[in-house]
Amino acid sequence: MYSSLRIIFKQPRQLVNIMLTGLLVVSLAAACGKIEENVAGAIVVAEYDGGIIAEEEFAAYETYISAAGVEAPITDEESQKKILKRLIAEKVLSARASDEARKLGVGEGEKGYAETLRRINASADSKKQFDEMKKNGLTEEWLKQFVLNDYIVLQDEKLKYDANIAKLEESEFVFGRHILIGFEDKNEKERLPEDALNLAENIKERLESGEDWAKLVEEYSDDRVSANKDGLFEKADLEKWGEEFEDAAKELSIGLISQPVKSSFGYHIMVVDERKMLSQKEWLRELRQSMSFKQRFINEEVDKLIKKIDLPLQLSSSPSASPTEHIAGK
Image (cartoon, rainbow, N blue to C red):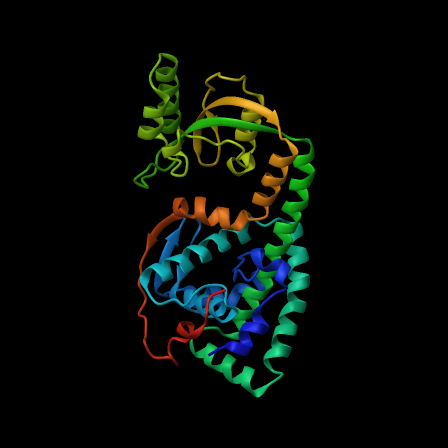
């Protein structure tokens, strides 16, 4: 249904992996004001650590990326969850973008939005299709937000990519394990910092007395990604856990059980098994992985952030009411 607009919304081929993300950055206060007002009293379809997704926002995003051909047709609850997780990931990543990325992204995004509108208004067919998209929630206001933040995330990924190249050229990589005692437990119940510290200290004592690491990781670790993998963080991006975690991983003696290391997530008990420089083959593999940062974030981090999902939304079989059913995936 949106064949011409799918071309209009696409970005250059070389940027596909890190663009067309449809983000909403709360720091863009001037542009966000009206949208934030619309969220008040709206139906909430998801809650996550740091925000919510309102039905209006989800509908606009769903229409946007479907028209762009980013995802397959959204025809069932699982498809909706996939799109919803993508949106959550993108909002979180946008909020974490550096000031430099925001400045560069907004500048380029304003140009990109103007070009998008020019292409929409270039033909009667594309204007008609965009009118249909408006009926499904994608107003010009939402479109501008999505286009602006496409460029913000692009710039943030580019800056990280450049930094990763420099880091990989000289970095020693850490292979280790950790047990996270979070400020929120596995049942999403808040845990006081002092309680988290006391439990972490107790686990350290039990490990030093000879208790099995694997059993304690499985029983106590609140890191859902690594808890069933012996707590491994080999070759991981240590920066995601914060400066204290990164410093401890780089400085801790091999094989020594650490004191509790505090991060924004909780307290970590850590063991470093090995440090080494990468071979050229490993270096190239790590560089390729750094280029798929967003997808790794979706796969590994989003579930930990989600507190509640209230789906499905009503899915219509009517072509005019459900345009995403007519958009082929990439």
